[in-house]
Image 1 (tube, rainbow, N blue to C red):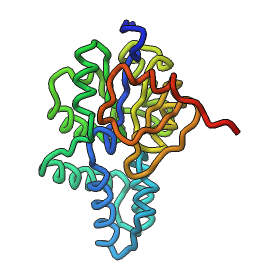
Image 2: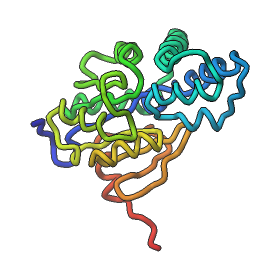
Image 3: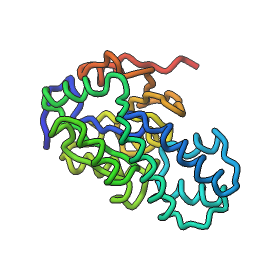
Image 4: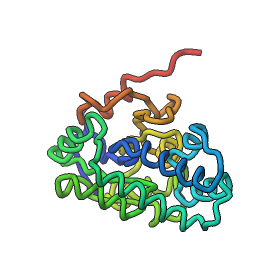
Length: 228
């Protein structure tokens, strides 16, 4: 088991799209272009409905919405190619992410990347960070159940050798937040395209800018639900 100072999490489990990097516009643009290119109609509501989804489930939705003559697996391959091309123009890191990742590493708090994106995308992002930033990487094409199922976060905690109850999950989407809570972790939600609602074990902050490692548990200690 990994041991860290008591005021720090046992580990921090990070979502990727929308949380670490601002890829949601790339996904949304690729979705719209594919559907409208086949004569279908795509709205912002359609894109928002898919944020944080398992890619094959999202692809099935896209196929049905646009009546696209492709399998979900073919749609996923196409979408990943479009997002990779977008990343080739440069990665937009979300505020405060690089600083917090570096501080956690310096303090010996392990981090894991837990994303519904596939290995090829996760590897492209991890390659842009200092070696050893993530001690485990869990991706959508290597789990049986995607978010909001707890499997991705339970898998990450298991690989790190920590109890999920001692972990903090950092997420941007309600689906991802639900997966973290279902795994038994605390969830820090930093909304991007779609906001999660605060509830016991889940707090919402506007940004990670200025958030320090020592704040990750303290934020939950200080949080109280409004009385009803």
